[in-house]
Image 1 (cartoon, rainbow, N blue to C red):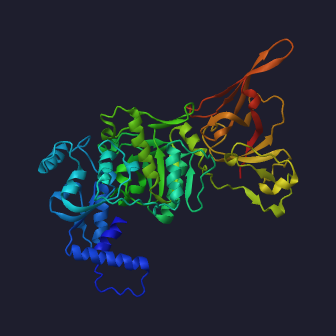
Image 2: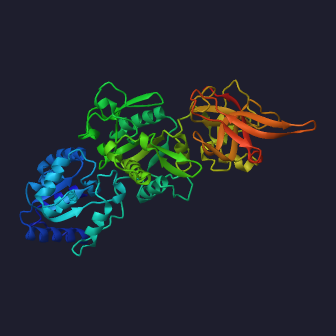
Image 3: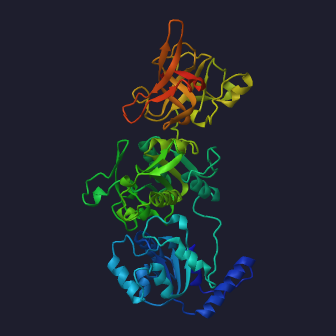
Length: 533
């Protein structure tokens, strides 16, 4: 929008024929003419605080007639001449004298204006120009060096300031609702737990980092401009050692961005991971967002929490003792990078509880099956096909096939030739690594409805209101069933039921249900086998 405005203000409209123009276009032309009369040789600058974005825009301006790369300037560059108009992009990233690596230059610029160390880049811009336009969003302030919002509140209160609220966004195909959804999701204030599934936007949660990277690769081949972006949850070891691995998740080894100048368009950027400082202000087709180890979800308090020791942006946390203030910055970081994608966003969370929370609101990515799904006209229920149940869309109530009229509500799959169909069989896909000693992530599995009797040591699919499983989300899990009993001479009762993971990943923990919770446990099915197609 700012680029369009600068181009518009530089256009020659003196001899424009407006016969075929709409009323809005005629108004626009007349405003430009009035501007030209007042400022016939206007000095216009486009102020961009972030060096990475500044480099990209300079390359863009070189290719646009009537625009020059010299129009793109830093806040410090505003001292080089007097401007009639300065347009400031990402004004929430203008800095104050705090947590920056160039305090000497900052102090020197303040002294030029007779300011002490409380002077800011906002003061420089106002002092060095007659008029200013600020694109500002306080929710995208991401570190302590950013100017506090009260400076802009003061500017808004002045009599000669005009405030224009941008009510729509034109980046994401998710629409305006997507912006609200992300804000509600990351601030844990979304009352509606139905899946958010906009018609023209691809948003899914991945259980596997490898799976997310593979899917992002497909979109990169198709659309280009697809990038991995993460929270600053790993040290930047490769900055000093070119061969060092910065990030390792699920066997996927990655490095942080090799350059902080125009990283998005750099040669090897798809094979690297960007951060907020190299992506804010950019448009991507797809963004693969990695929620790092510094952010987690507490199932007891039902809140997102931050671990300061695992946040490695030194200037982003130095001198910041208030953990809630740091949390606000980090939440803003993740919101901002989730807004980058035009076509979609892929999400992977290192913390299993956070991943489970996301999966309550966002669909889980499911790999394409090799199952032969039969058209319903060819289905003979439980004769030539069995139903496929989607655990991840069950939303608190796992349906059962009860009457024939419900049959058409399910997909029906033909089993391999060596397996006979039965009326108690159904098929589910199992995602995640909690049972990977027996069931690989993404496997399609055959289950039979719970036959009753002893379940000790069997693998079961269960439903319980108090289950929070990082692989399944809330309410469901597949685990190895074990029980502890209190036995007397005449009878026995369950003391507890233990649902055990069978995983090579030792971080998966037992789910223990005590005797007060056991009555609410529902055994959906008993595992039969992994289907090999």
